[in-house]
Picture 1 (cartoon, rainbow, N blue to C red):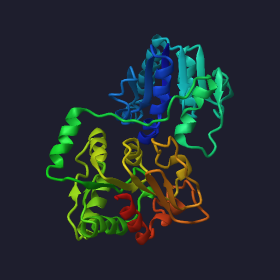
Picture 2 (cartoon, rainbow, N blue to C red):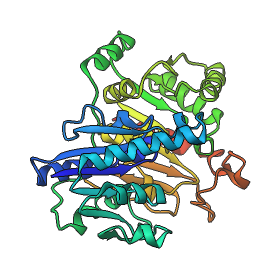
Picture 3 (cartoon, rainbow, N blue to C red):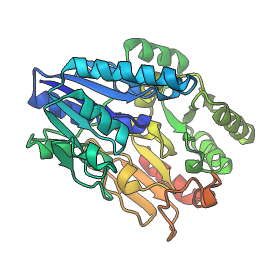
Length: 357
C-alpha cells in the first residue's frame, strides 16, 4: 500500500497530522507513507519512522521565479506524484491545489474535502470528508480513518529530533537544572500579548519563584526586536536563545523544561506533543480547535467562552469578550488584538505557581 498525505499548511498544522500517519502505519504495517507539506514545515515530520518521504511544496521559493519557471516546477512535481503510483491519497486541505494534485495522482482511492469549490475537482474524490465545524484539529485529521473504516489505535501527537540536537541544547543549558520555557511570539503578530505582560511573567518566574527562564524566538527580525524590548524592561536576567535554535533544537529544549508559557503558535503544539505542561494565551483564534492537545487524555477539551480552561496538564487563558474568537488579524485587522493586551497578570501568576508544583 502506497499512501500520500497532503497537508500544505503551517508548522503547527503539520505536526498535528502525526496521529493520522501513525494510525495508517499501524493498520497497513507494510505501507509506504509519503507526506507533502509546505516548505519550512518539514521539520515536524523528519526522523519520524512511520514516514518514507517528506515532499516539500516550495511555494515560497517559487515566488521569485517567473510564471513559466513556476509552471515547469509544478509540472515536474505532478509528474513525480504520478510516477509514484499511489494507491491512496488523503488531501487534508480544502483548496483546489490539493484537489488537483489528488486528481493527477491517479490513485484508486482519493479522500478529500466536501467543501472544495470546484465541482469538477470535488468529483475526483472517491470519499468526501465531513465538514470540519468547530472541532479539535487532531480529530478533524482523523476523519479519513473513520471514512475508510480503519480503527483508531491512539491519538498521540509526536515529534522527533536527533541526539546532536539534544547535545547542542545541553551545552546551551550548562549548569541550569530546571527552567521555564517562554516563547512569547507567533508568526501572526495578532496572537502576541503585550511586552509588559511578558516582562512581568519573566520577572515573576525568576525573582519570586526562583526558577530560571529560557526565552526563545524565531530568527525573524520583528521577533528579535520585540524580544530586545522585553529584555530591556526585565529586572531579571533570563537566558536569551532568541533566533539561536532550529525547530528541532527548540523541541529538545522544550522537552527539558518544567513549564511552557506562550501564545497560540507552533511551539505551543510542540510543547503539548512533548507532554510539557503548557500555559497558552488565546485571543482571536479558537481554543476549541487549536488549544494544546493533551496526549495523556487524547483530547483538547476547550470552549469558546473565554477565561481560564484546564485540560489535563495544560491550561488556556483568554479574555472574556463576546467578539471572541473573531479570527481577525487583530482588531480592525491592524495586527494588534486588544483582547491580548490586558490579560490579568494575577491570574497568570496564580496558574504558573500551580502548574510548577
